Length: 459
Image (cartoon, rainbow, N blue to C red; front, side):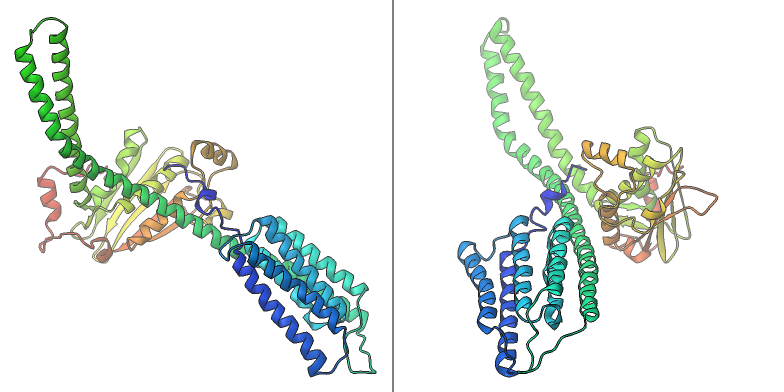
């Protein structure tokens, strides 16, 4: 598989849209203004009304400047996004300083900028913003103006209670940040892996389209090439056979014939590929098609096939072939000496099982194998594969996606002790496996294929 760089798939995956951040800040501004006005005019509590709205106005000016400076679809760089979220933390801290510090029930809003950072920025930046939020909360424990309360009365919460609020903010920042980052990171990895899968499928589609283009080019070039051949033939009769001119004409005739041969191959190749793609094959032939490349390079792959009733047929599916080949490649990479691929069938299901005698999946990998960016290779092997254009941890994920798209269920496990090795078990409902295949009512398609000389070479 061609090298696929994750960064090239989602170059702006982490970058916040300006419009998102601006809308969230407008919501915060509306909430802060409503809270301050409600406390002052609704409840009648005295508070530094003008200073509070001056702090809120700072957020308004920032939003207006961002709207004027950038289009709504602009994506913020990590540095600018971090600075804006840090501003939000400090702006909230300033407002809380004027309205009671951590005694103010709205102090839990310190978690909001950290949550946004965890979903869109790197863990290092989220950690920095979390420390800023906790530091601001610590400052508010020690210094703040009185909490607005009824005129002539004051409300002072015990220091132990305020310390509990500070602890809640600290734990909430840590938990919320880690949880939100984990969920967002899994979503990003899945999006990148799906993008990689789409690139692989698009590449295969482009290759198949090239076959048609090659056949069309061969057809269009046939007429001018025939004209060149005719003119060359007439010149060879008119010019002397010996001498430099005769040698050049003979060379030209040879090259014309060579071009004809190439165009003939291009035309027939497109037809052969098309007929092969639409071919109905048996389960044994499908397995043999997957195994043959491994035998070509000298690896011993044992293939067995047995089942109940007539052997199932299917349309040749490039996605299934690619997925099975990828799993088999993975098995041969880790096998000590032997890989076995077994095919079995019954009236209700079709099963392909790939076993190797290697070390199997590591315990920490086994529960997540088949997920995007989860690799079974060691660090040294990943480094070497990365230099060679692979090692991204997408192979099994793409194989799993392509196989399950055909209606199968893929299970990846380790062999039960004392045996060793990994087991990949693919199970189709028989009707899903045979979908689109032209099966005769008598179920004699396998015999027909064998009579045509397409015998399976299962061992």
